[in-house]
Image (cartoon, rainbow, N blue to C red):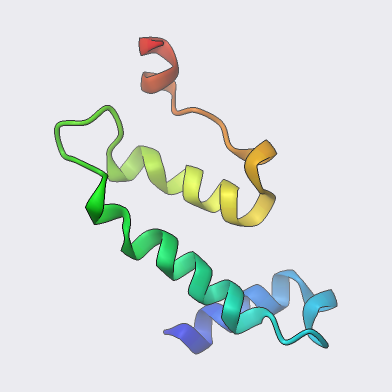
Length: 76
């Protein structure tokens, strides 16, 4: 699975090939996902369906790309 994701990262950012960052970036993504269980609570305002796009946006576009889920933005 790591190799498959690393290939996807490398395809998205071929300019990073020389730096050999596909696997480290993949592991950063996995770390972000794998540790969500420590803080993402079923009774919270975020659920897996609303957090998934945020993870993708953060990983692919950085903080400026992240948008609040509709239900969280409406509650604020």
